[in-house]
Image (cartoon, rainbow over all chains, first blue to last red; front, top):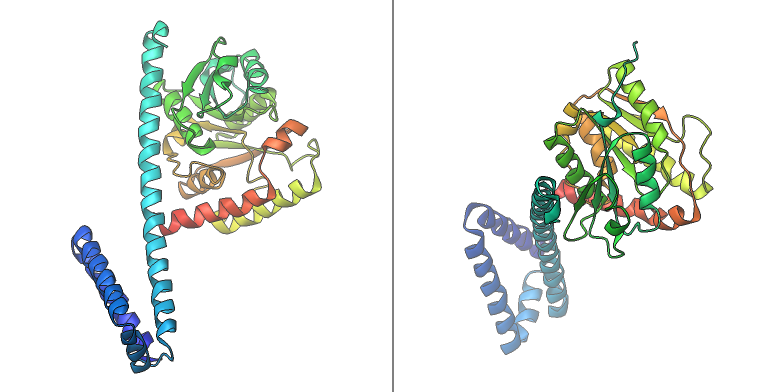
Length: 113
Length: 231
């Protein structure tokens, strides 16, 4: 296992525990701020990526950014799908309630249709 | 085994319809001729499907938006249960199903004291279909075995008759075509007594064009996996 793998596994594990144990919104804000700060640092001093990559066993800074982006995309996609599934369920419940209420009103008063 | 005289009004038939202006009226009229109580759920149709059936003696429900056949069936079942329907059936609106098959299915359900009677197009040879469709449906049977642990002769048939108790157990979360697999899964998980009965499916150019494609199988699988992961 390369140092990058060890760091990534520890990092994501901590992230998951934080999400589970704490207020999700705060944790997401923290994650967002961290990612933004890191991006900022890489823009200001692009050599940081290269130095860090070499330090943890990845040959190029560009590869490090690519790996990190992939991990981020996977996590983000899963969160987006989870949110979509929850929203779809809520929408279904709401639409069904409306449908049944309208049907009940029509049944009681056919002229209301 | 005994046969019972049966008031057809005790069977509530739920018909989910989406953009079925062409076929819905004929399907519903066939059901009304058999004397059943009919619930049509217009699933947010854009072709004004409701207008071709609203003058009939039915219960017409309208989803404000398109949710999917699974959602429409659940809505219709919930509605029928508010009237304490003794038996509830599901029936397609595209003209593929025969209303008279419901009588035989209900008789069988009562004779065997079962909870659910599922229609099957593969028990007898009365249904002819394109070979690719047959192959896809056979694959669905294998998939359903791995999903539920039970072999069915036809795992994706929209013709079903169930008792009031069985209908109360259903709580469909799959809005779209994966609901067929979910229905079987919930029936099996709740140890309901399930039997099958041969039914005839009439395939027409119209119904084949509207029906599931081979790609639908992958979509159904995807939906089931997503539901399992993001419960």
